[in-house]
Image (tube, rainbow over all chains, first blue to last red):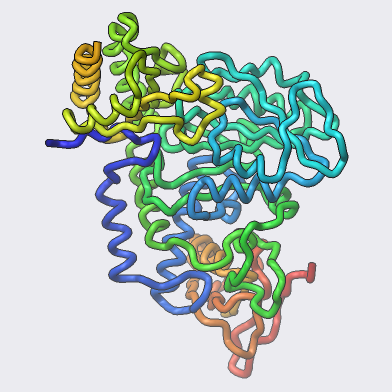
Length: 399
Length: 81
């Protein structure tokens, strides 16, 4: 049975051919480390890494390629940013739709404060959730009254990995600028398909993953941060950087400050190729493709939703969401639905809480969770129609 | 003018090589001569022709030394910070 992959929110598959070629080329022909030795193949590897930084800087309109820091994934990036930027006495705002990649590092160092409550001491880090409605939309008009004198940052996803609901980053950026707050964004679900302009949107730090919408391999990711902010941040990981080797202290210079040790060079080679692929294809074209598929799926399953087979979590329209559709099944375990879709139709989805319990609580789908379909660059209209039809058969058999 | 440029990190050396090429300068990445000390082990040997090598400067540059038969006299050095 042919597989129909519909789990792009988890990781993108397949990857463009050029990604595999770039990784194989690096591993078979180049192989050298960077920032260490000084010979031809090392320089060639350096050029590959530089090019990837430059493409990411261009994609996100960051300050400079040196401000693009590579990590192994966006979870690591968010850990570096959250733990590096927030200090004792700080307060942060997060949305009620955040992924555990934000919430777990935050809960490691901070305590949640209900709205309207002040911290008990000046030495703790605290945070408050900005409410979101039943479709996952941020209630941005609530933000002003949640600010405390010690509020320092707003940390938000650009789109929910559960419902796809988009965050109004432009409005939040303006709010942060007006109130002197840092804006840190998690772009896991939108990078590659939706334009994210750091400068225009007032984003101070941006975390990205290489293996979802950017179409690179797993084990790649990073963040982009200004010079000023970087100077204030303590790195999570320190060690050899191939620079200032006469010193045993962490260098201030970027990107070295946050890139101790050897990076995932085959991965970065693949990511660079993926970024060139995306640039050639155009973000708008990818967005149009994914949006079209999402709307096609929403339209195709609407009769089933109207017939009470399930509830569609999140916005009604594709233009208000990333290419992610979660269904709260009625009378059927979402895991069972996912299992049957794979066993009987070869359709691959993800069921459960998607590492985002807060989002599910917001959407009213906690603790059962949902079955999630997510589409990408290689998904076809035919596959979407087949998935909708498979869902119809499964739901009818279950009645 | 022939010179050797050292940098605070490898990123700076690679960036310089990419950008200085726009002026038509001959730029070659190389291990740093032991007579020069540097924060990072890769430098750039640059022939800027009739241009002054100070025409293109970056934050990552550590020092510019002239390439002469008897050594590398320093033309410019970044301020200590």
